[in-house]
Length: 221
Image (cartoon, rainbow, N blue to C red):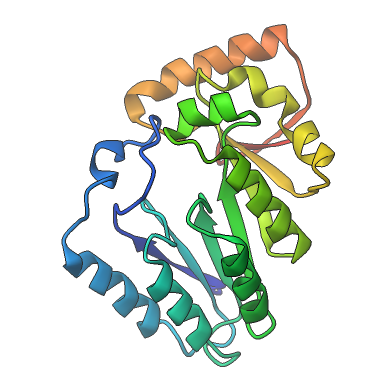
C-alpha cells in the first residue's frame, strides 16, 4: 500500500493533565531531554518526500515545544512533504501563532485536529483539568477562519455525556463547520467499559444521530 502520511509521536510532555488520559500523572513532568531531541530528530529525518504528509501526534502536546515546532514548520518546503497534520489541545497557541500557521500554510498545507471535549467552561475544566475553554473556542474560530481546522475531537467521559448531543449544534452556532469526532475508546483502559456503558444508557434516553465506524469513532450527524 502507498504510504500517504507518516506520524511522529511526541513524548509525554503536555501542559494539561486530562483525567481520561492514561499518562496524566506524567504529563506535568518534564521528561528526559533525550525524548525532545529524538522527536525533532525524527521529524527532520522524514523531510524530503514531497508526496508524503507529516503528522504531529502522540501522547503529548505537539506545541508544547512551541518555538522548536514552529521552527520546524517554517523550514518545510514543497519538496519536504505534501502537508502537515497535528492533533493539539491548542491551549498554548495565541492569535499571532495561528496567524503564523496561516502564513506557513501558504507554503505547506496545515490541518489541525483540536481536542476539546466540552461545550461549556465548567465541563471543560472537569475533563481537561484547566480553565482554557474561552481561549480554545477563540482559537478554533481562528483556525476555521484561516481554513486550518481539520476536526474537533470529543472524548466521551461521564462528566461530559450531557453535552454530547449538543456538540455539533454548539459549533454550528459559533459558525464553525467541521467534522466533530466522537471518541469512545480514549482514556485509561479501566474506564472504557464504564464510559461505554454510560454512553449506551445515555443514547437510550437521549437518541441522536450518529454514523458508527469500525475504529470506534462517530461523526455526530
